[in-house]
Length: 157
Image (cartoon, rainbow, N blue to C red):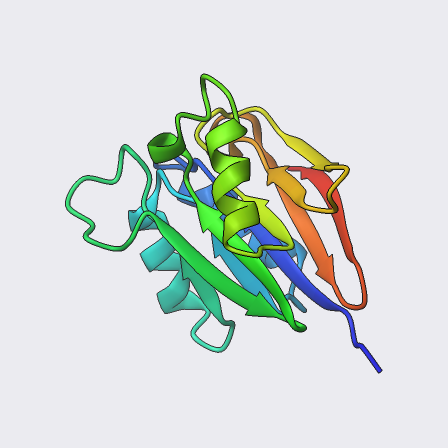
């Protein structure tokens, strides 16, 4: 009944386009790329190279001049994924505000960056909290599998 969709989750490229291109080359059968900010220029460039792959991104605190909303909702396999960079939710201080906002939005998972620290955990209420870390600085990113359930795999270049 449910087919699995594979989504790459990347954040914080900070000018490292090569790392983003490596992710795309390693996973040629991606269904979607989700970009969580601090590297919108690289995100725009990768969109032009892979126009057939659906992509969604949000700007980060270092993405000056991008008027896009800092939080977006992406629907996948009947599940609501909340995307944000995290700086508006003060995630370097704590994730309470972020988690409250994600629960209020009815999200199955909240995806964020900003801290450069990867984490993937499912809260007791079922909500997934996922941060792929910094692709540009440490080479970390994630693969999100969405079907009947959500699974996340942290990856390293």
